[in-house]
Length: 203
Image (cartoon, rainbow, N blue to C red; front, side):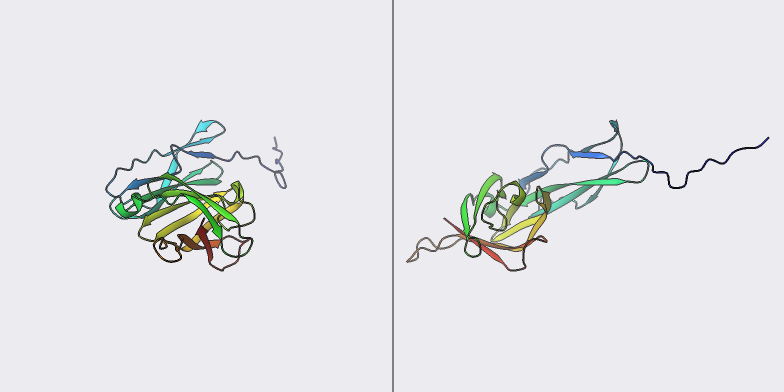
């Protein structure tokens, strides 16, 4: 009696990747001293629920900043996917303000960034780099945590991965002659953008 060896070389194997979805809001903010409840994620493979692993920052509700929680799910073949939750903890001075408005870049294509407030110290810009026309591929979330400090954490949108560094807000001086408008400045981190700071002036 003999057994035939099954040939497996050069055969491809189909794997089903995990699907992970953040429960609740992916980007959220709370005032200093507020309450944050992590709603977790839903993770599945082929419709069946699987476990996820949480890593990243522990949210300190007493310290202004942006905290990033990462959730990772892995399928039986070892392939992983991850998703992030962003939590801004906002100091009272920033919580009381509203930076909403249209801001025009003072160089390059002179593009306009529409800044929209979503919550305490939590905003979106629809044109992170001030290109001629903004949209979903240039929209980012950012946080005004305290004072002049803006934080634009690394995040995904329709245009790829974006972040900004050295981000700050200038409140201007409306009482000056002539009045000095408010503005903000940041340096975009994305392969399609240069390393120069970009300033946007409120219109």
